[in-house]
Amino acid sequence: MIDKIRINNFTAFDTLDISFSSGVNIFIGENATGKTHILKAVYSSCQITKSKKGFAHKINDVFYPAGKQIGRLVKRTKGSTSGWIELKRTLKSGQEATLRLSLTNHNTSPDQAKVTGSTKLWMEEPFEAVFIPVKDMMANAPGFRSMFALRNLHFEEVYLDIIDHAFLPSIKGPIEKDRASILEILQKAMEGKVIEKKEEFFLKNKQGELEFTLLAEGYRKLGLLWLLIQNGSLLNGSVLLWDEPETNLNPKLLETVVKILMELHRLGVQIFITTHDYILLKEFDLATKPGDNIKYHALYRRKDNNEVAYSAADNFQDLSPNAIDDTFGSLVNRQIQKEMGGLGK
Image 1 (cartoon, one colour):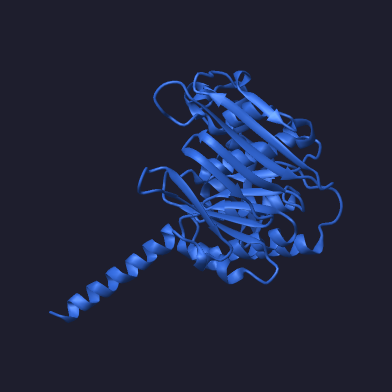
Image 2 (image 1 turned 60 degrees about the vertical axis):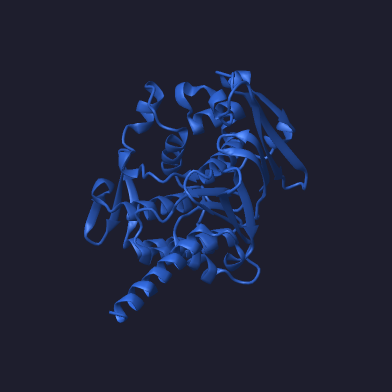
C-alpha cells in the first residue's frame, strides 16, 4: 500500500504532503492543480517494483517532459533551483519503505538525478499497478507495442503500459467468486465479453464480434476494466490509478463503474482516481458502506499567492473547498435566478 507522498518544487507544486487511504482516494480540483501528476508519481513508484526500472527513468518516461529532459519537472522559476518527490509504502511485513527522487532544473538525463531512501526494501515486495489514462488506447492496440519499441513515439509510457496489461493472459486456476461476480456486472453493462485476436480487441455478444474501432469509447473503458479483472491485474494488494473515469462514459454507467471500484476496494485493491464529475462523486457517496475506506482530496490554488494547496475529508459533504460542488451549486442558483426573473416579467 502507498501511504504518503511529499513534494517540494516538483511540476505544479511548491510543497505538498498527502496521506492516502488504503482504500479509495478521490482527487478533485480545477484544471492545472496537479491531480494527474500525483497519480503519475504514485504509479511510477509502484510500477518499478515489477519492471525493476529505475525510478528516475520511469518518472521521466511517464511524465515525458520536452526533450525527455528530467530537469524540466522541477517547478518553473527564475535561476537555478532543485526539487524532490518522496513516497512511502507499508510492506506486508509491516516495515515502512521510502523512495525519494531529487533533481535540479539543470539535469538533462535521469542518470543525473538522485534516488535515495530505502530503495532495496521498496523493491522487495513487487505488486501490480495499473494506470488507466483519459485517452482510450484499446482501439489503437494493434501494432502499437512493436512500433513503440522501434520508434521514438511522443507518447507517455502509461499508454504502452496499459496495453501491455490488457494483453496479459489469464492467471491459472478458477476465478474466485467475488471476482467472477464483478465480471458479471461488467458483462451485463457491456452486453458481452471481450476477446482478442491478432492484437485486436472485440466485444463478443449474441450478435457476433464487434471490433473496438466501432465500439463506443465508454464501452471500451468497461471492456478494459473487464480485461484487467479477468486477467488478474487487479487483485488483492494491487493498485489502480484511473484518470477521469467519467470521460466519454454515459452517466447511466457511472453507477456501475463506482459499484465495481468499491467492490475492488473491498477485495484489497488500493484505488486512486481523479474526477471533475458531480455525478461520480455522488455515486461514491451513495455506494459507501460502514467499514469502507474512502478519502476525498481537494487541490486548489490559494488566492494570496496562486500556489497549489490541499485539503482532505473522509466525507464528500465535509470537503472544502470543493470545486465540483461549488460549480453545481452555482448552476442551481443561476437556474433559480433565471426562473425568478421570468416570473417577474
